[in-house]
Length: 338
Image (cartoon, rainbow, N blue to C red; front, side, top):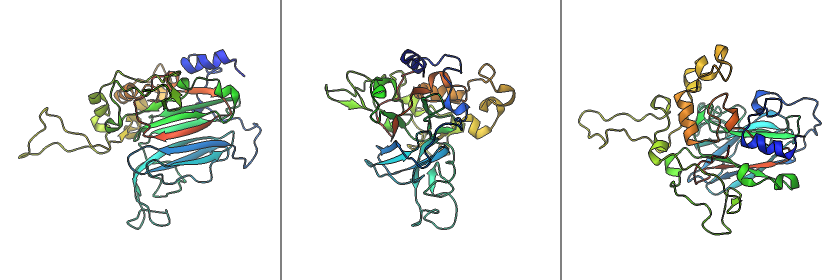
């Protein structure tokens, strides 16, 4: 086990060699790990703080997954699931869904998409990954080194604001870690963004994402409303608005208003070019350029993954044993922890 000082150093800077601070999506958990088959001992809690219904989805890459891979959450609802201690996987939120009574296709009948965003082949209980773009919460609970790795990823795109909150699960070592170092949040949707002077701790006992005035969460205050409203490059917007036609009045500033729900594809997802996806001759940090999408995503969500080699300011590392709370539309502003 790494000493506590190294945990914190990795958490703050993530600049150690890969032997010390490995990003969890770069490797497969060791198969010789002790596993209790079927033991669902680690909590995954989903909360919906969005103004509308959300359909969370879960994909398992290793270990024992939860009892369901997809369900509905109304505003204000939460649901607790559990996974094995060595689970590796991801979670995301689907929006604007309409399923048939069996949850096996769209309510309109036949086959096809049931969700406008992050659809899983029309299935309520996801058996495949969601259609991009999706804001992802990614986890490797036990990588073979007694550490847990997790992140918010925008590598494939963005659809919903999301926060990840550590649940110590009764572990005193985890309870000792200041919560303002472990709970990232990404808010890239203008109408769900708090003002730049947002104060989540107006009273001494106020809490925000399991932090309080003694352990204040560092929030980004650099980006303004216009930057958040327009961060997605025009060609990567899923719902591109049409410019005014002849005979219609233009907007006063000459700009076309963007839709309130504005999912954004990454350049890699849309164009599949090696230089955007860090593949082939670009498969190294020194050779893969940081594109417009990645720069914009990182400005709006400093603690989120924006492209394949964004490890140093995106991966969170804590001792193994924690559970997690995934919050959709957490409110406030994006964090700037790392």
